Amino acid sequence: MSTPANFNGARPVIDPDNAAMLLIDHQSGLFQIIGDMPFTSVRAHATALAKMATLAKMPVITTASVPQGPNGPLIPEIHDAAPHAQYVARRGEINAWDNPEFVAAVKATGRSQLIIAGTITSVCMAFPSIAAVADGYQVFAVVDASGTYSKMAEEITLARVLQAGVVPMDTAAVASEIQRTWNREDAQQWAAIYTQIFPNYQLLIESYQKAQDVQKNHEQLDSQRS
Image 1: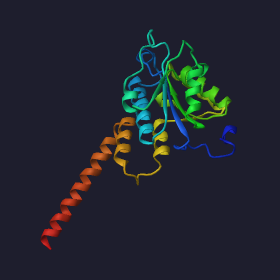
Image 2 (image 1 turned 45 degrees about the vertical axis):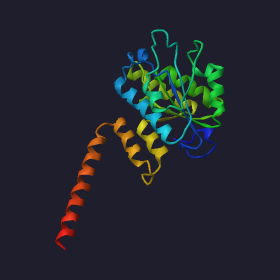
Image 3 (image 1 turned 90 degrees about the vertical axis):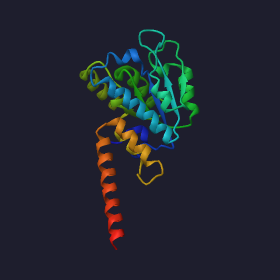
Image 4 (image 1 turned 45 degrees about the horizontal axis):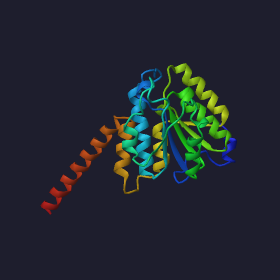
């Protein structure tokens, strides 16, 4: 796939120092219509995005679509994981990018890359992603931290956003691209994020820790014998 035009020939890779996280309409009511993946996974992945943004000191902007109605409130885990996140209320706009305060909040971050996830994928993620690209932003859409009512709707949406120049990604890839290296002081906190993205990763951590414990025991025994 060729490099999207809005990247000006540069590799379409996330720069955590130039990116902002937009988490749109992750609401308890909307989660009930997700059919392309388990809604529990979407919930966990959206929270993981908030956590990694906090670790990377990235701006986070959230919003909800008519939270006082059947769409329901924003899930609390997002702001728990990102206490610095800025919530922008809307006045009924379906596309968050149609809300001037939301766009102003994005511009105020000074970042030119946007990582966007939203429920539902075909509307709340796709509409602002396409609009942001048209306004000159480099956009990464996190598909498995979004969610829509059918697999067909997801596939059609991916085709649409790709044509618009949006780069689709999954949550684990976003984490790895932001983290960059395990040689960092908060490596254990990043490992905890991966267990939220794919819980079986916890088994890898446990097996590694057990191997480390066994190795230390062997070294202690060898030291005592010498």
